Length: 82
Image 1 (cartoon, one colour):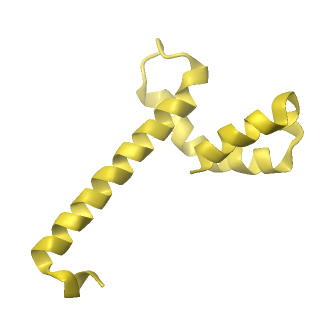
Image 2 (cartoon, rainbow, N blue to C red; image 1 turned 45 degrees about the horizontal axis):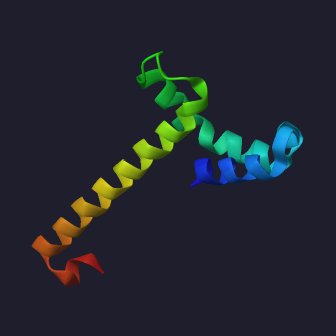
């Protein structure tokens, strides 16, 4: 979510985004995921594409986590998941 919000704010703020306080907060919140993605990804991937790759990895992880949670709830019953 921070990466998407950072992208949208970057579109609105333009070249002055580095001086924007909200941009700096979103950048600090998104930095761990972006750093990890840069570290994992090959150097062939451009730096400007790293936030998109990080958002993709996080979306995939979220979908898989929800799927596992749903499977566990189906196995244990609805009462165990409330």
